[in-house]
Image (tube, rainbow, N blue to C red; front, side):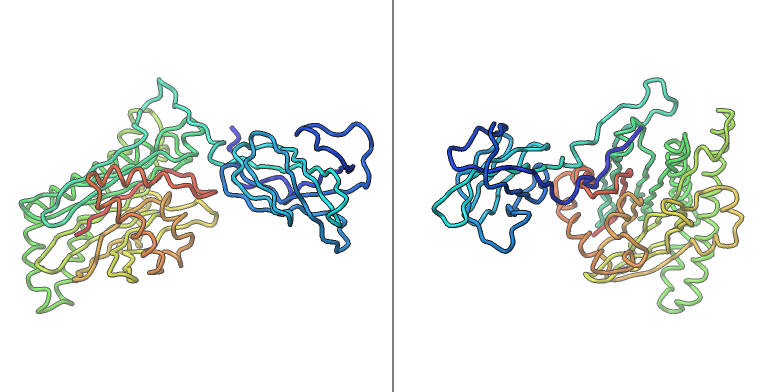
Length: 426
């Protein structure tokens, strides 16, 4: 299936050959039957449907002469005005080749009829179709999901929606998330996963990954491990190097077990389908967060692309790792047995203890790619400020999860992947 292009394939402007003759303006869409004199060619810059337009009529072989214009005749689909200097302004509503007719003069005394075709390119958004997956497909999945909950004096919201490329192709959403808070222990867990677009069952792989790993993390942090880490955090200030090392090792083990259980679940699902675990390929981002007085403790695991960050105050961001990227655009690392065995696994676990952050944010690359563009951009405080300024009104709404889901419908040419975000903020 061919997907619509975001680029405008026609040239920058479209010249129209015309002849001109003094007299009344013929109706739009008609051309005088006799040769008109003098023969002049006009052109105007292309427009885009639904966007404010300002372009100037230009004589192709002007030789430096200044012309005057008046009395424009337009098709009903165009709402434009013509200034004496030849400026066309307005809001073209319908895409297509539109013939416009006007009068022009070199001296203001003798007037001639001129014509030009204004090419109005379609709004790329109008080209995207919304199609449904096959009704008998295995692992059906809602096209969107959202959740919000309170975490003591903190708040949590998460949302995920099917991208335009999957809408157009009639495919399911591959992203997924898991968020939960345990009031008794004070621990919150947030996970986001992005199923591989090339893997036919990745929509279920991402669901298995976040739910299996998320449930394990929460159960462990509600139990003896969470209590042990809580007591260790009490002594952080007295011996930060020793305590951070101890807690780091505990979370390395915890995240490894959670990831291994997720891999087990994926392999079992593949076996039931008599398929390959690669068909369920997914990334996995996870964060465990706990408020300790004025401090916010954050432990994260990052496998694949997307982003995890402790953001704030304004202008400051602490990336909790780096995205995995392959040799070609769109490549990344997925959760599997090889990832568990890699000596790089420990590098995927980060911990931090902060007094001033505004939010802990996890997102799939459907958001990080259009908003940050590059790994360098991902580390730029200004870009995080811009993102925060966009989503902060959503978080202040009565239903922040729905507002966040609505915001994820933003349009950026070339970026039409599924979008998911989970965040915790004060």
